[in-house]
Amino acid sequence: MIKMLYNFNNYEINKFKYYDGRNGNKICLLDEHGTKYMLKTPPVKNNNTKDKYYTNGCISEHIGCLIFKCLGFNTQDTKLGIYTVDGKDKLCVLCKDFETDNKKLFKFAEIKNGIISSSENGFGVELSSVLEAIEEQENINPSILKSFYWDMFITDAFLGNFDRHNGNWGLLLDDLNKTSEIAPIYDCGSCLYPALTDEEMKKILNDPKEIEARIYVFPNSILKINDKKINYFNYISSLENKDCNEGLKRIGRRIDLDEINKIIDEVEGISDIRKEFYKTMLKLRKEKIIDYSLNLLYEKEGA
Image (tube, rainbow, N blue to C red; front, top):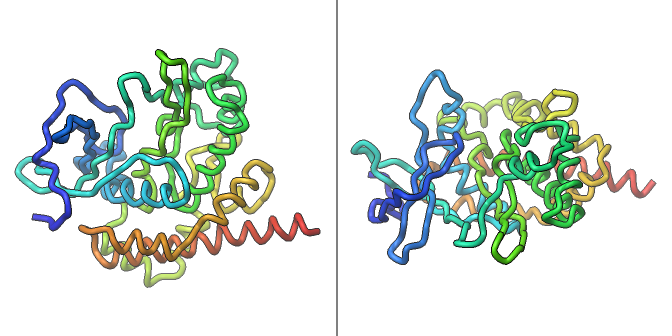
């Protein structure tokens, strides 16, 4: 049995709520107070799917959410623990369900679908179409939503998130009271290189070329410009988008590596080599993407 703080086998299964999405299998659990949680389990390996990219997605989900939270975002509460699947204890992540009786999550893909003039469907990831939908939606002040979006983009760049599409961020809408708010950050399972095993991480740490490739070459954003995926380093350091630049300033000044390293060190159930890998890559992504671009920006503004 994996040594963990939490054991989720005592939670009650709720057969009246289900969750979509790829990143692992999901069920709804209830604690002793009736509070709803989504349990994500590791995906069953299948050569015909992309599930292998999320082998350690439960770990990435938990740590990614913790880092978003320490950067000031409203974020879904998560816990790492064990759950027995087919007689085996699996390392899983428990995510608190932030929907209430009145507040319902609407993924931005659904909001975008409601804009009749949109040039793409809701799940389209062409950056210009996403930004157009942010401006045209009527639930949240567009300036506020745009700032949030670029803050999320910069944080995803820092964490190496390759899959922040329109289905894993959104709004909480209350049809009864006619209120709207930005939903907590959720679905961070594509951060922090979830496909890598401990052994692969160890090899990468001993190879500077492999490290650099995972900073400058990949992972890329799922967002596209002219149907080509955005490279985080190239796009952010180009300083071509003023709203992105402002997000870079806001998030850049909030990143505290000492605090983030403490978060990683306190996570139970993962190996020391995995902790070392996360801390090393985040330090380098901060230096080579965030800090580098910030220095260019300050030089440009001071000119």
